[in-house]
Amino acid sequence: MNVTHISAECYPVAKVGGLADVVGALPKYQNSASFSSQVIMPFYDNKFTKANTFNTVYESQLNLADTSYPFKILTLKEPLLDFDIFFVDVPELLFKEYVYSNDDTERFLAFQIATLDWMLTWDAYPDYIHCHDHHTGLIPFMLQESFKYEAFRKIPNILTIHNAQYQGWFSHKKVNLIPPFNFENVGFLDWGGSVNPLAAAIKCAWRITTVSPSYMEELKLSANGLENLLNHESAKCSGILNGIDWNVWDPETDNYLVSNYNTKTVVSGKKANKKHLCDTFNLDVKKPLFAFIGRLVGEKGSDLFPEAFKDILEKGDASILLLGSGHDDTEIQLEALKNDYKGTYNAFIGYDESLSHVIYAGADFLLMPSRVEPCGLNQMYALRYGTIPIVRRIGGLKDTVIDISEKNGFGICHKDVTVSDITNAIDRGTSLYENNTTYKKLSKQVMGIDHSWNASAKEYIKLYKSI
Picture 1 (cartoon, rainbow, N blue to C red):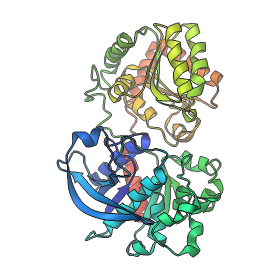
Picture 2: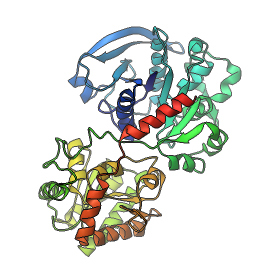
Picture 3: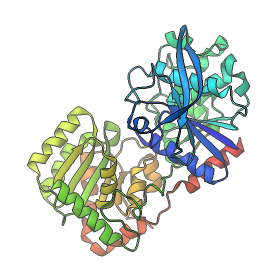
Picture 4: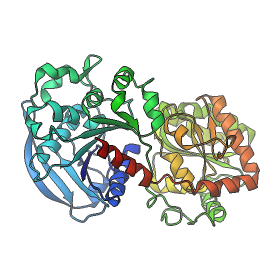
């Protein structure tokens, strides 16, 4: 059985969010389960493409209305991943330093059309086409409605929603960019007066998945305008929890760490990595270290950090380290805190892959007070490295973290996204840390929780076979 994944991101080629991690791991685990999986994604002008060389496997022209664009399909000269990956090179539109921008309608339409045009030339079509988020959302519509792609009508297609907040809206004035179709069915494209690629995919895909069971249920109540549609299409919807790549995220072999460790050496291993962090960022190694890694945006609750962190740091019981970037105002406020709380607070504004690994290993707690969290991978990375997650009960966080007050609990959970909820949760973490024996026991315990892709990949295969 062959599965073709189509996505705007794929780790390690291009990563903006968790979508990249999923598409960079799921095919590998599906291949190990006797499926044949591959990925098709855009060719960007980024660090990965600059560092590697490519072969051209196909060349042609694609049309967006009256404009023609040359494109190529590339593949790596030297295989680097555990699955085949192909790159759609539309130089005029896709070959940019960024992944997303303000002109994404034409960019990702070109990507989707070029992908399907190339697939028409294959000797054998895939058994399943798996699309990810709105950047590939018009593929299910085109497979169903565009005259050009009639040969694909009987191929089951699946859409995975990684984040329903972003839907790819554009004006009906641009509908002529889509390859010709029966205009009587233009309603499949519309939602709320615009062409909505995510809504079109929900209507036309054979199956819809989200990246956690709880997120699927939450979307039926709050999905940025798609609630009624998802309820209407609920019979073909399900939630499958993401996994993480245990080969990449393994404290025993992680080359980024100062000291590697396993469940037997977790105490000394985490101590060494924490000392390195505290020395690097001028933090008190004796205090519990609370960390945040991620985007500084409203979805993550980071707008509340300046006030919440002040409340915590004034008490003097904890240290805080932040790694992330996002809204300018939040960045400025979080940078300003450095001057007032030297020795207990620091922030790295930006993103550094190697630093993120060391933080997962060296921090005592990871903060995730998200307003929206379809699945969340950071809490799974934290658990893998023996770091206790502090999360809001939402989406995948609710599916993966049990509060220490409950049976078999191992994390700290809070209900709402408020300053008091965040500070109370940190205070609970401080109390837990002071109970040294209990903290060390939990740190060792959580490392054994299996959130690898093994089980999740099997769930997707089970879904494919059920169609």
